[in-house]
Image 1 (cartoon, helix red, strand yellow):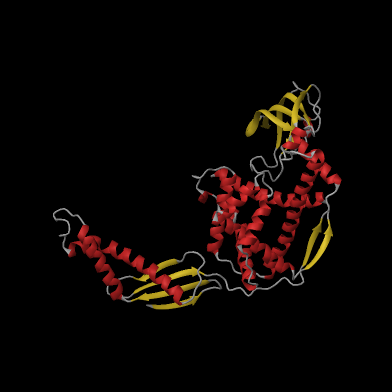
Image 2 (cartoon, rainbow, N blue to C red):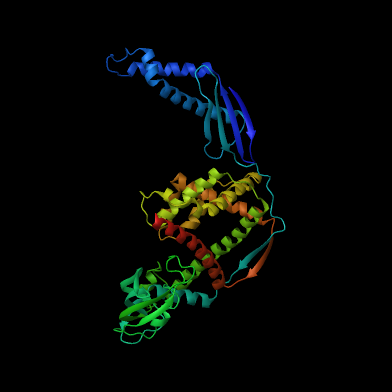
Amino acid sequence: MQVSVETTSQIERRVKVQVPAQEVDQAVVARLKDTAKNVRLNGFRQGKVPMAVVRQRFGRDVRNEVVGEVMRERYVQAITQESLNPAGYPHIEPLVNESGKDLEFVAVLEIYPEIELKGIEGVDVERPQVEISDADVDQMIETLRKQHASWQEVDRAAQDGDRITIDFQGFLGDEPFEGGSAEGHDLVLGSNSLIPGFEEQLVGAKAGDEPRIDVTFPEDYQAEHLAGQEATFEIKVHKVSAQELAELDEEFIKQFGVEEGGIEAFRAEVTKNMQREAAQAVDNRVKQQVLEALKNANDIDVPQALIDQECEGLKRQAAQQFGMGEDFDVSQLPNELFAEQAKSRVQVGLLLAEVIKAHEIDADDEETKAKVEELAQQYQEPQQVVDHYMGNDQLKNQVKSAILEEKAVDKLLEQANVSDVEMSYEELLKAAQQQNEEDKEEEEAAQEETDKS
């Protein structure tokens, strides 16, 4: 077997392989003999079909089958011989495939990039410093009470924060438009769940009112036929309901797993959860800065095969999140929606792998279990979670990977100029929420494409 390798780009190789004709032809003859033993043709008994007839009827298909197997086997031998590290599957094409001639084929493949890792020395990283005050805890408890609030119908004009139950029909000019109607729709005034100007015009409405309101759809509205259009909505108000916050009593507190200790124990539990949430938000904010700096310092070529694989994973996540079902064909979602995020993930993954390798970072079972125990504290039955994770190699490896990533980020952080920045709990959460909203916009774009599919 003769092998030659041509470098066509930083991460692409063109491998040309030549296999002696005798080796291929002998394999074809052997396969034809096996075929002759089992083939059934009219006029011949099984196993008694002449080889000339077998070759005429099945020769081409058998040769293609054998050549395919030989090319796959020799490809593996070739990349092993040439110490190539492929990223994804190759494109293999025969160049010469004739009986009596050496088989020649070419395999075009992407390889993992050779990375000369650059650090992030001198990069400025801001690390939020957050103290949770009594006022923050009071506000969180108030939020929890709102989340568990009930609605009571009232006989008065609707106020901001009230929930109104309405029917509505939208019109462009005199024509109703698709998707512009609903019956028995519950709308919380001030929630900004509908287009700008809609909810504000319903403040002051009472049960039985039938207001007519005018609104303008935003220029960037997702439904292109409505973007920037002026519309009129005819509305019928069925009822107005006011929110009644949950009582801060023993029954309410028990919903959060606090069985003893009353209000003080509940406040302590809320504070602990807020501290954990704040710590996670700080870590994520620092991590994002470090990884962005790492990408900026190392502009590497990323194999398209790895990007495509990551796209497939993101598509499956999107389909699962939007309840599309296991039978949904994710290939209907265009790669363009996920390509940028997929490329970034692959780039970060490759670079972090180099950091881990360069600093010989590892995590043993004891560290993994400690991490699982930390994560399990968020659940009502922590030990069950620990047992489940530690008894599942796939889940345990996922936790180990997360630990290695944390250690790699910490190692990079040692190179940066880290400055502590005072930040309130509210500011920290707003920044995290903004990031979540950006992620949500990407998910909604995926949902639109899913709906089109």
